[in-house]
Structure formats: structure tokens, C-alpha cells
Image (tube, rainbow, N blue to C red; front, side, top):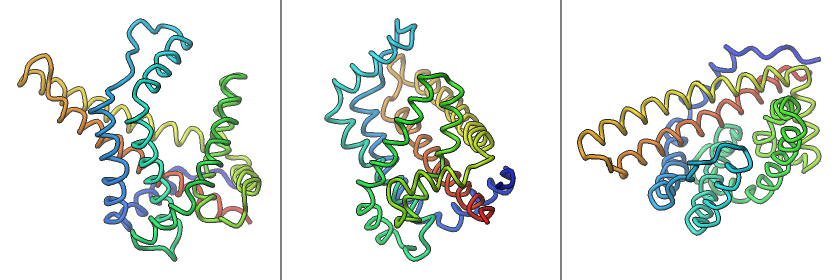
Length: 245
């Protein structure tokens, strides 16, 4: 059985990876995560959740939002998805250490990566619909899917899932809570700073605020959080792989 995940070691690896590849990661994150999200926020806005008090009503609001704004959301979403894959490549493939080579490999892997991630998402969704706890557990067990698809391309579709399941054996809950804690802290920090920026913009420019600035700040933090979570996932994969003997 694998040893328990060491949160401190994983976090140090997360930071060291980003420091080692900060120029390449920064370029990819800025071009494919930040800019598309900023454009989407400027032109599509956010779902109108006023009056949506139940999960079904919230789901309907999101469906209406995406249906009305898909010409903007689809291309910007695909660019963001591609950017995440490219960062995975840059952090996991030592033989592809330049931004250009990482982008090329990410483009080649994109269809397969998309298929695996959508399939994994459906499995987790089934767990959440069945009951919340199975969905949380499955989320932890399938967390390494992204780096596995990129770093171990020879495994194929079923091999990627079996590899993720093997790596996280005995650590499903540990992985889930680590990713949850990091995501919550990062999101709360971004929300607080976003509220402060929004308040400052409204004090300076009136009730309408300064959408160009506010959406830019939100998109910037969104890109930072997405990049952080990719690096965290890679760090988890590395540590679990090192334990897998």
C-alpha cells in the first residue's frame, strides 16, 4: 500500500515546479488562461443567479447563460483547456522544455486529453449525484488523470484510469482534501481582493464601476488559480509515483 501523502512535501514541489518553469508557465498562462477568460468575462458576463434558490434553478440559469453566450464561451473555453494541457506538458515532460515544444505536444494530446477528462468528470458527476461522499472520493482517486495522460501517453484510455486508481490507493481522501484546501484558500483570497477592487472602482467611477479593470483582476486571479491547481496536481502525481514501488 502507498504511504500517506505528505502535504508539506507536495506543496514544496508545487512551488519549485512553478519557479523552475516560471517564464514558460507565465507565458502560457497569460496567453491561454488569462486573456481568453478576460474576453469571456467582458463580453459574456456572468450567469444571472438571482432568484435561483434550488440546484435545479441554478443549473437552468447556467444552461441559459451558456446557450446565449456560446459563441464567446466555446472558443475561449477551448483556449483555456489547451493552455492547461500545455502547462501539464511543460511540468511533466523533461524532453519538451521549451514553450514551443510544449504547445506542439499539447495540441497533439488535446483530443485524447479531452476524452479522458470528460469521461473522468462524468464518473465523478455520477458519484455526486448518487451521493456527495462518493463523488468526493472519486474526485480524489482520479486527480492524477491529467499528468498521467501527458506523461504516460503509452497507457491509453483504460490504462490512464487504472494508473490513477493504483497511484491513489490509500490516499483518495488525502488527495481530495489537499486539493480542496488549496482551491478554497486561493478562491477566497481572490474573492476578497476582487471585492476590494470592485468597491474601489465603484467609489471612483460610480455604480457601474470599471468593468475593464474588474474583469481583468478576476481573470488574472482565475489564471493564477488554474495554474496553481495544475502544478499541485503534477506534484501529487510525482509524489504518488515515487511511492509506487
